[in-house]
Image (tube, chains in turn brown, yellow):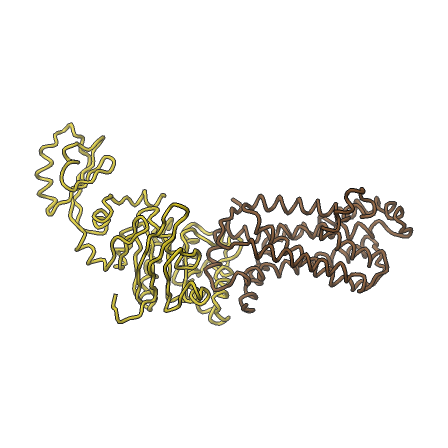
Length: 257
Length: 314
């Protein structure tokens, strides 16, 4: 692993992200609009779950932030498939960068992007939507970082499994909705139908929401996020292993035409 | 090639098959530093597969590739450091500026800031990109993009340069500058593998030649020697509709569509013998005397007439 080359790829990928700022803005604008409309509606739901003094934003802000973070899966997918569409993939592969350096260089700025996105959305939640963080806000930091890593590696995994950009995108968006619903990001987990509850814990969303809920609603501190963070780390390792097994750099991928 | 000079590129016994289709059936070639090797052959001959294998983009089923003495299969990263590839398809980041495109690949090649600036300025000036540096690649014309595409491959002054159809789709100016750049690279000591459909470019470059057909090297050597050995004069006749049968039966005659090529030591004498007997009904459209050149070498080694338009379009 050559850190200088990874740095070059990170700088380049950051430049590409800045050049297509619209897709980044969607990661912020989409959840903010959703929060504005949904927050009032969830106040009774939280009361029903026993959080008598809770504001609807206490669920909707973390929920929508976690769901919107899934957009990064598409961004990761595009960062690979875009190279095929632009015919630059062979050029990058013919350079002295290794496969691992290329993946690390593409993943790192997108992990940072999700960390910034989630941080900004939670700050906006507090300032604009009056979300009340009852526990130690700083305890969310490790959870957010590991969740971001998990989603980006899921994106690499989806890239490895899909052959066309359309397949990958469909996979990414279905994942966002399905994981969001099953993991309790959309509707609080306690209100999900009985059949959905046993499935929830297999989604990264469930663990991200569980960690956030324990800090925002449950007065939790660093101890409260240890298990969710560890599980998300395990999921990241699983996605990385699948990607390492299935990602073939010489495989023909069909990019956007 | 001067046998006392260690080759910059040595390919030995390279085989590659895609399922039942054999793309390369044991290719050997060597390129000395400072020389240009023109890689020629019809479509599907295996040229691009060979270039891809040398560049480390595909694994051969058998055989070895050594780049400046480095085993490219065992140490691909080290081999890539001394290689520059311009693939057949134009590959640039269209949302980035020309400078950002160049800067990225210069960085990947390990050039430090000052080196990057100097090399980018030099290559941009050589390929007439210096006034386009702040332009986004998507706003460039086809020829300008093609120049940027080539510039990326040459930024780090590679010892082995692989150019796969570098002038396809290029305008006249771009083509002239690219050919000039290839000559300069060779003069500075780089070994250049130049795969092309355009035979006249190889003649212009005075490059050594390797002809590939159906995955095999069918002829190779210095251009002048090949032309002397295989190149024959010929009389080429084109007709409105069909080639008269008696012409197609002449010894060595090759019919392609409505044209026939008749090998001849003295095409003028052959023309004098053949033309009076044709008659007006034959519908003769054009008569051409072909002197020994790469086209006639191609004809001799493949038994097919070379049609640049067909080759380039495929």
